[in-house]
Image (cartoon, rainbow, N blue to C red; front, top):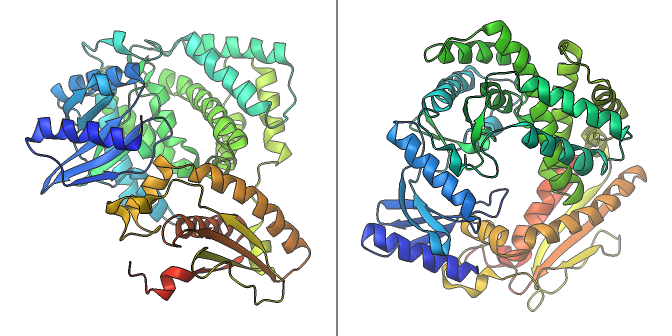
Length: 483
């Protein structure tokens, strides 16, 4: 469905719910799926609108939400739905995710964040156990439980979507045998509770200091251990091991308020589910990172490998998985996913100058460094937010424009290609002690697409290589950013 039709469907649904049309329909940051989210508002009355063409996912999410909400669990209220147009409205829980706290933490792990995690694991235990009571698991998608079939799917994604793409050697039959033995072992745990499936900080909103949970449409019946493993071993969270142990203890105390728990048995299966979760995320990283070349997923791989190494070094499983262990250790020892040495980039002589410009106004920028020029990327084929009245006064640095470009254009795919091209030049220039490289992004007005692309390239190079980057937005600076 086109952006215009999605916004019309959500506007109609908002009017049915609120009795008046919204005066703001703002696209929000994209998720890792087909779901598209908007904030709809009129005055102080706001709602989050969602479009998802997957009816089975919608049915699961809506049913789970109503069930959990009736039990007083921390999930958004569902306001309205239009199944025919694949849209629904839910409570607006604000813009602060728990992941945003991780981005601010720096090199240490502050106590306020530990306390927030403790509150999260308390509510997780509540959701898993209390939320499971009388839950209609028939609405689950794609399966009713995290059973052996679900695990084999994850193992196969890991094998074909990660190991094969990373050119990691393995004996397929021996690895398959290990997968089946390991799955049978994990299913020995108590698997009668609600399993969120993707319980990580991007799916936890923080409002008024309290956590709320979203995006549990993939939930199903399963073991308690899996969600806790997903949270505490989230790759880029990089939680110190001592704090992981503290949070595990806190979670078990929370669980004990609802059901009896055998700590020794729980912990034994817990580390098995930690490894299972790592295998699952490697499959995701393979598809999103190695195949689609999305930088965020590639950057997460070294952290996930650290988690796996800790488990292999400290946990002895009561089941033989020699080929899986050998394959994982080979992956760790190969160091093929170690990030570029940013100290080397920072100490280099290279300065990358990045410009945004308008083809019909200032034209392609001149290179005054003496290098004779550089890359020029034409953004004009991308869907232009400047064609729409609500974006005309904004630029590629404004959230509505950024989300428009991510949802309704091929900007991300375009940038991935640009990153690959420029990365090779940057690495070569660092090795050869070159001093200058220019990268230019042009569009019609030098206001939306080229501004966003130039900023994205600057962040990418600074984060990946540590090189000196200078950014100039030629049209916007000429106008004083007034449009």
